[in-house]
Amino acid sequence: MQKLVVFSGAGMSAESGIQTFRNSDGLWEQHRVEDVATPTAWAKNPELVQRFYNARRKNILQAQPNAAHRVIAQLQQYFAVQVITQNIDDLHERAGSRQVLHLHGNIRFARSSAPNANPNMLYPIQGDHLDLQRDLCPQGYPLRPHVVWFGEDVPAYSEAEHMVQQADIFVVIGTSLKVYPVAGLVHHVNPNAQAYYIDPNAQAQHLPTQYKKIALSATQGLSQLVEQLIQGAT
Ligand SMILES: NC(=O)c1ccc[n+]([C@@H]2O[C@H](COP(=O)([O-])OP(=O)(O)OC[C@H]3O[C@@H](n4cnc5c(N)ncnc54)[C@H](O)[C@@H]3O)[C@@H](O)[C@H]2O)c1
Image (cartoon, rainbow, N blue to C red; front, side, top):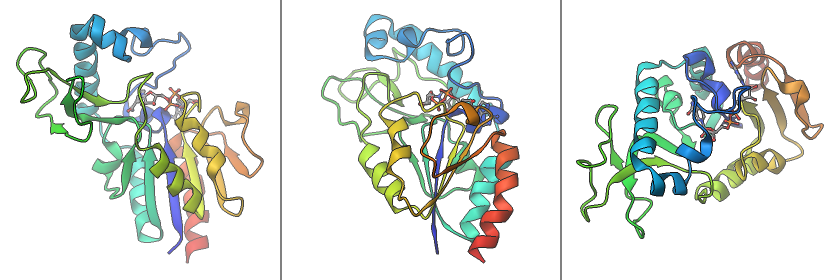
């Protein structure tokens, strides 16, 4: 089976009703990123950060996978599919994708905010709410969302890089490619692989010529591409 690697960003879940990160006003759900998605924000105002992610989690739990998430799961019948996502939602998994690597964490989990906490020790969150006073790790530190904040390491990056290098087909969907280091993944694709970039804003993106740009939404772009992919696999 050929290896098909999907690299998704916030645009992948836009049609599920989850806002992308950069709207034209440069804010994320009415907040400056520095106020809610950095270690400094957590140190300064953990209540605001916790409230912000509780609201994101509530929104994500109410959302449903869209047709594009479902198509990717169906492609598992024809390809060895690996999803690499920047998204902190779990819509790929809920659509049925079995191999999903979260580069920026998964909001359904928490980890300890202790200074030397093991980043791999994860706590599943029941419901949509983490409470700063009540939800504590065994050492007594508050649990924080399992998300990678700006300025933090991306521990899964090298694993993702390896997956991209191995891809026979690489499909990038709904990402502005402005968040580093992960945006750099697009440059690790094998020159012999088929590479696609689906995003309404695709034409404005500078990418190696190997990439075929599909300037459509995730659902429209994938429904256009899927027949061609399946024909190539059978
Ligand atoms: N769903 C989520 O989990 C979620 C939502 C918002 C932000 N984030 C976080 O913020 C960071 C944002 O970086 P990013 O590059 O992923 O997002 P981004 O907001 O920087 O870019 C979104 C991209 O999606 C495109 N887009 C908009 N509507 C689309 C649609 N219907 N179909 C396909 N594409 C569409 C836009 O043209 C843009 O290029 C990520 O690292 C992620 O962790 C996650």
